[in-house]
Image (cartoon, rainbow, N blue to C red; front, top):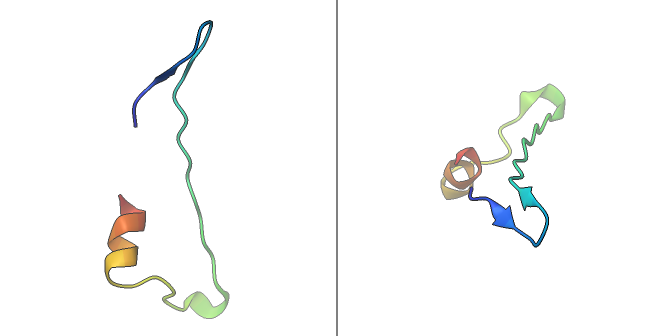
Amino acid sequence: MENRYSSHTVTHLTVHIVWVTKYRYRVLEGDIQKLCRE
């Protein structure tokens, strides 16, 4: 992630997603799982 520059600000946003399913079923698999881990 890179910094975003505006006229008076610099921002660097990072988002953490926690996805909890009932009974811990595997919801994301394969390429989608790899993409979300990155």
